[in-house]
Amino acid sequence: MNLGLDEYVHLDSPLHRWEPRCKLVGLMVLVFVFSFVQDLRLLPAMLAVTFTLYVVSRLPVSFLLTRLRAPGFFLLVVAILLPFFSGSTVLLRIGPLALRQEGCLDLLLVVAKFVSILTTGLVLFGTAPFLTTIKAMGALGLPSILSDMTLLSYRYLYEISDDLETMETAMALRGFRARRLNGRTLGVLASLAGSILVRSYEQSERVYKAMVLRGYGRSSRPRDDYQARSHDVIILGGVLILAAGFVVAEILLRGFGR
Amino acid sequence: MHIPDGILPAAVSVAGYATAGAATWHSLRKINQKEDPRESIPKASLLTAAFFVASWIHIPVPPTSVHLVLNGLLGAVLGYYAFPAILIGLFFQAVMFQHGGLTTLGVNATMMGVPALLAYFVFRLRSVVGKESRVWTGVFGFLAGAGGLGISVLISLVLLITTVPPHLDVEAERASIYALTLAHVPLIALEGVFTALVALFLQRVRPELLED
Figure 1 (spheres, chains in turn yellow, blue):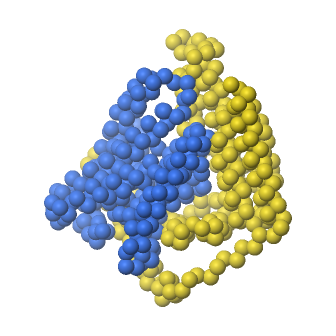
Figure 2 (figure 1 turned 180 degrees about the vertical axis):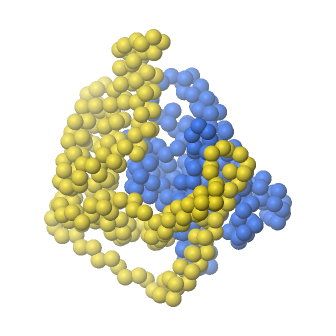
Figure 3 (figure 1 turned 120 degrees about the horizontal axis):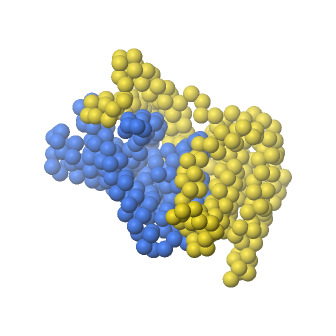
């Protein structure tokens, strides 16, 4: 099974070449600044920055579109609820429902922020191998227990999901169909979940022994030598200044708004 | 259940990261107090992946099907590793499937991880009344599963409804929190029953998975 995150890491673009630690800091700051934006007048600039990033990253548009589809449901709920229930200025009445101006503007803000943050996140994780990004987090001070756990679970995620698939096929071949909700179905599915846990637990004991044999936990591990060159730092500086620009603009606009 | 990016105000996201950071720090401190903390890392990591995969199992609720959250079960099995495990699981979901989000990772981890820790404490009470009893394993499994999800649902609804629609009046807010919480009660019960069944399965097959 391929979860598709590393699909386009082989491309060559300035964002692919950008040093992982600088990229992580720069784009995460940008993502948080986007979530800080509340003024509608900043939305065009925010979307422009986002799409410039995406174009520069050379990731295909289809990659973005398939990724945007998955969380669309939640967005749909917000899209239906907000314009009708939030606000007091009524734009349009349809029977008992009233389309409200504030709700529509809130919706615009939510959608624009959602798309910008998600796209920037995709650029961050789609332009470097996942392992490189996690190691960069470790180099930036993520506790080793967390980075070890992340890498190990990522390593076995694919295997365990294959296990689940095999077991589900075996169950189907033996005539199990999860159609109705009753005690038996629930019992069988609970045993399936339990088996997944037991199998991975037993595997983890073997994995641990193999890791100890190879020296896990004995010496401090070799440092990942990331080297930020001057242009990596300059790009980071540029992105941080851009992010600061958004914060200043937001604060100024809020001030004028009152 | 996962709050996506762009919905919450930045202050709430930052506060979420702060609480998730505090909970992670506390969990890691407890983990490091063990004799050899590294020994349980492979176990916790593989179980993290296993929980992630197990949450894809769909339970038929005609005419549709639901998947479970399993944060109560995760707490019962992983103990203090539950919080890092949930943090990592949600991180995977955010970057691989775009469920939840990067800015809301802290909020989501708090929302699901703190109830998982509470479920761990609840499930541990089992040893007071007798670990070997299958009845008590079932009862505390149910409490851990239902409680874990129930508290998560409550936290997420309160957060969403109080922060998201900025122009909603207080009465409507309170009414919708009550209504939506009630709507989740069948799911919470289902999660409780499922957790109890898995706990009983583990007690029968691999009881050491339920030990501290």
